Image (tube, rainbow, N blue to C red; front, side, top):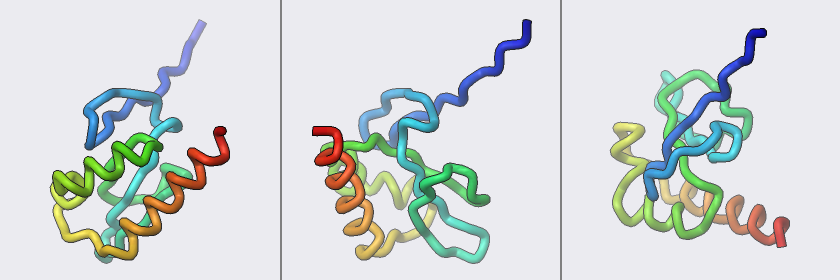
Length: 93
């Protein structure tokens, strides 16, 4: 009986651990571009955050994305991330 382990990741804002699929991944690729990774499979350095506006706001305030990705994160990406999380929260209601 071979049970496959589910990957666990930690939110950069609230430090809670959850299944990789439940968190949102931001990735910095080898060429330096930063983008949201909905599949969680793109190559590059990744940072995970909960799918809540509170965690995204806390990560931005504490510069969690910059620290985790080791580079500056464009404001456009932060706005895009906030919009995606708000749409996700509205869809859950």
